[in-house]
Length: 399
Image (cartoon, rainbow, N blue to C red; front, side, top):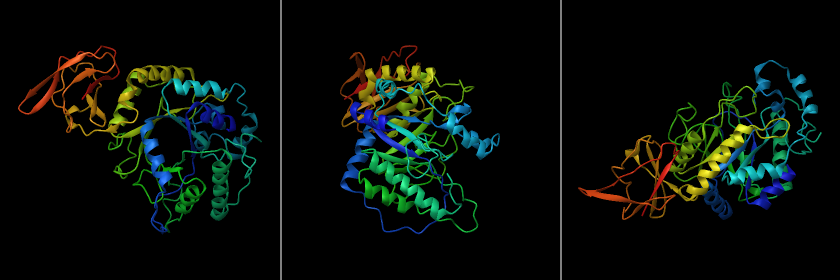
């Protein structure tokens, strides 16, 4: 973890710590209204401009190669699962190689699962010896609350600047007859005291709560609910947005899961999230020996090649409301420059430009080839479009 943090600073990527601590969606008394600091507001803007990050689910569950929830399958009891920590020795781990792979892919930040739901910590925590460098907790929430806050303090004081803390939900006590108070606002305030610019996000599938600085969407583009997780959360008009998604089916490493999404699918997902004003946090489940799965690296290489040629249509852009495009065309913008992302190969024309687009000139982003703009009854269209057969996202730049 120290090596990763150092390399991130040296190479320009930034670190987001995913402290995956579950808590339920229940009513609770809130302290005074949350007022973000100037540093925090600046950090939100910087985060929103990055657009593409890497999610890393890595821990002792990787040894079983059955995904990140193997402990919950009931195939192994907790005592036996805990013993496996002694065998978790990623001897091939090379932080330099990982960082180079992510930078070459065009990623601007990393979200690392410092602690997943199995309670195993991926840093040298002094709160428990159940960690990658080396647990006995009372079933008492006050004790656990103190333990979590002590770990948060470690992460935010021992590892330099941390861009964000990524919490994973509210569900362990959602069936309680008496609403359970998880006191998350106290934790959010602790984080902001330790590092005022540090952003807080919680993957609870609900509207953002006081103290949160990012709205998270699991497996869903903001405004959609294809995965069934986003039915209640709405879309914030003020906070940065982030969509997390897997390359295959699992978050953690699963040897049998070779159902990787194609590079075309991933690039189109990146364009669709950007068109909603959101970042894409693309997950990888590293192998227990410290290597990244070969297919995942191949997909990142392909995404990096596309971003090298088309990155200006993604990084630092704002989303654009463009209902005319349906699933075939989405749009992003940077000031008065609009980018039309054509996601299907049979598109030959754009019938209408987004609201606010002047439409004086249109060119193919990668080649500079000029396209004809036609004006009919006050509406401008772009004609003569020829999308290459195997193009994942054909971008037209319109000024």
